[in-house]
Amino acid sequence: VDSLKKNPSFKGRKGPVVLCIMDGVGFGKYEEGDAVLGAKTPVLDDITKNNPSVRLKAHGKAVGLPSDDDMGNSEVGHNAMGCGRVFSQGAKLVQNSIDTGAMFTGGTWKKLVANAISNKAALHFIGLLSDGNVHSHINHLKSMIEQAKKDGVSMVRVHALLDGRDVGETSALDYFDPFEAFLNDLNDDSFDAAIASGGGRMKITMDRYNADWSMVELGWKTHVLGEGELFTSAHEAIVDLRERSGAIDQDLPPFVIADNEGNPLGPVSDGDSVIFFNFRGDRSIEISKAFTEGESFHEFDRVKVPAVEYAGMMEYDGDLHIPAQYLVNPPEISRTMSEYLVATGIKQYSISETQKFGHVTYFFNGNKTGKFSEELETYVEIPSDNVPFENKPAMKCKEITDNLLEAISSGNYPFIKLNFPNGDMVGHTGVYSAVVESMEAMDRQIGRIREAVEKAGGILILTADHGNADDMYEHDKKTGAVIHNAKGTPKAKTSHSLNPVPCVIYDPDYAGDYDKELVEGLGISSLAATCINLLGYVAPDDYDKSIITLK
Ligand code: 3PG
Ligand code: CO
Image (cartoon, rainbow, N blue to C red; front, side, top):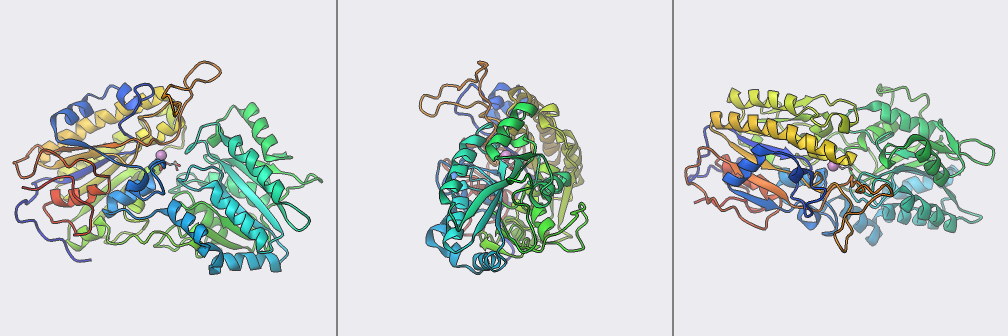
């Protein structure tokens, strides 16, 4: 890309522009269950009250999702912020590919189907079974299974992960029961489809950013080696394991389905074909590596590596080309903000803890893991603890800030970005009191950042990628009333919200060079042009409109 043009009327500030992404912190629609509102956040309150601030759209079409009923998520949110424009995202691209039939006439589908047929082997589907539309959609899976039957595949085995994180926290049977019935309806003398294994998405298979490979190992044992507790059906496994473990869906222990002889019904074996049907990349990369890497794989002992044709729903990493085979082309995200900054010679610093590290790097840069420039870009990852975050709601926000303050005061980095995972990662646990605590911990750190930015003569932008912490109880869609459990307590909501997010510009050296009234009605994709403007440059023509109006 070309370098950015200096803006003659606004030269920027002495200190850095700091983009602070408070993951999962939106403006709640309901007072009850809004942990952002419920927390004591004196710093956020004060900054918001006394500085230019506006709400930004962070869900649905504003971030490239199929409809405005789709909540935002970190992938599409960080893509939008980092790329300055809205691209049709995985959820939409996969649905289009199915609707037009392109998926099924494509080379990868045909190859996997032909492989299963010629080997008289199974076609496996592994992925998240829900309609969350963040990582996957159950309708995509159903369409593929129907097509597999039409195309002559005789055996399908599904390895289904329970969600409860992008959908209701104990909603698994709402998906599994009709799905098992759907498979039974399809089955006949020539076609045999069944669920072969499963487990909670936060227990097996779907780790991200190398946080905890033992999850992937447990998934491998479950889906591939057929090792684990045996059950006669997924329904029975879920009911039984829930009762014994008390776990909510995302944390349910793994299970293996047995055939009539008591052997695993469908471990992945030589000659089979395997489709990982999640479209989102972060939690799909590790399991894809386990299936496709040769001797160089050292993350865990796979015991045996079946010779299979493996494809992902999408290419999950556009830099490292993981996996080599995939069904749908990912969004063609190009000319990201980071790329422009590098072309302009502007040094950048990016930091978060493991759970969100890839969000401010890989997602922000349009799903590329590599840097555009080693010299100009600094990435810092603070290792996340592998603990239930409701027990440690502050997470690493202090450690992130300790490092960040050094970066701010060093004077080395005109553009700094960070992600505080608290609102989102603690929000996903569904534990309201813990989310309140997480917001209060984050607020204290924002106070430290504010001070450092003031000292450096920089600008702090406070914003978020989507809502979550702002909406911790299930509400009746029609009446808005809180839904209660049998125990009479509010039913926890673990998923993201459809709410708008804040955008506050704290600019202590403000010199009247732009309107204090921020532009209303924009989405988070406008943050890229805004950051570029605040750095003193003209944003690329086709970037979505800046939130500030320069004078
Ligand atoms: C997850 O992967 O944890 C959730 O499905 C989505 O959360 P994120 O979009 O905030 O990462
Ligand atoms: Co989230």
